Image (tube, rainbow, N blue to C red; front, top):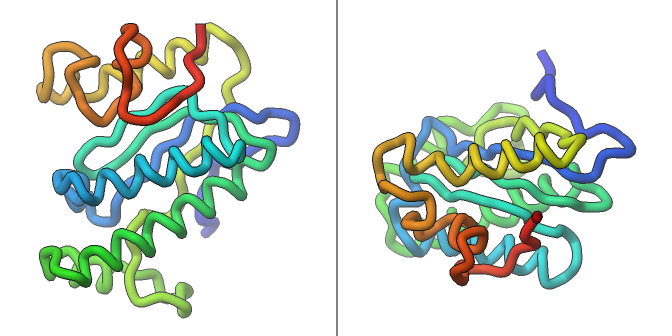
Length: 177
């Protein structure tokens, strides 16, 4: 069975993607682990490797929209880099339960690693038009509201909703008008 039925498509360079932590572990309730994701997004943005349009970091998954020349490559690099950093930080004193779960969840074919942070696949969806892009941005921003964590999207700290409401966000993004 293939790793994912979703693939990036030649000619489309703006994608909506979801990355989920194995076993839905709530890693990102620890701010220092959420910062790894944000810092990685910021680095990719500063290096002009992606144009980040929207994101939300939830307790056990992230959603984002980005444009890149080679989205698949950037997504793979993002997941690999953040996984290594997350494991490194957890080894320094994070809950051993998380490392144990990530060890048990590692796929057999992943012989070059001990832990698996992210579930296989990220389900990137090409975004064809402006209306679909705006709908996906709204979906991303309302994720914490639908979960009952906040009343307004811009109240969620780890989201680009603040940028879209005219406030400054935690990291720079390319706001879509």
